[in-house]
Length: 283
Ligand SMILES: Nc1nc2c(c(=O)[nH]1)N[C@@H](CN(C=O)c1ccc(C(=O)N[C@@H](CCC(=O)O)C(=O)O)cc1)CN2
Image (cartoon, rainbow, N blue to C red; front, side, top):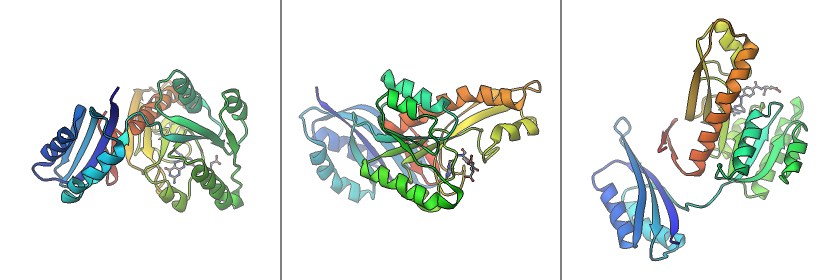
């Protein structure tokens, strides 16, 4: 079967980009299976994602080398990646395990295109869950006066294990500016509110106190600014006056798991492109 690749790119918009890319792929005996594009008229930036096969068996390395000239001509930020590649991923969790368990189940049934390299927690609650599945478990406590050392341990592990993606699956520690910057575009957090409403550690209680009629969850890339990162996916559900904060927490669990799984899947399938402080999602 022919190798499959994903081309993603963004660049200043001008006429002829799609023709140039399609012409290049045709010239390399490649067949385009999926193509999606977006032209941000506000910023003048163009975004493209193409899934294609290399019918003549041209390697990714050769395609990347050959594409360079076009990329320079249009000042592209681009990637050509093996479509079957599964990013080496660390799942980070604190005390609440619903998102972790959901991701592990989806992975076990082949519905989550990642490679789980390990589970990291500032508590030991999920060691058994990891070991039962043969997944390395790393307990990295974060004492108030030991955050820098804990983060250095985490990043060393990430680098040592050739990590490509970090999922904050209800990991309740705020990452420092330095670590957030080092993981830019490679760390996805699930926030348990419909951002920008109710940032911080206790959004459901904030929502209950405010008397909202809709609550939700938001998956976003991690940035130094808490709960401000580029949004990948959101979902909302209806609540009412009769629901307690705890009932909202319970209802929100299902929304969090679905939103995070979608965001992780789309990121792994290279369907999410950064557009400044926003995203373009070719879902
Ligand atoms: N740099 C970032 N780090 C993290 C983000 C982020 O957006 N940028 N998101 C959080 C997750 N989160 C909400 O989604 C969140 C987690 C924790 C807190 C918080 O105030 N934590 C307290 C400690 C709480 C505890 O020990 O239980 C703190 O860190 O002082 C707010 C929001 C993950 N990290």
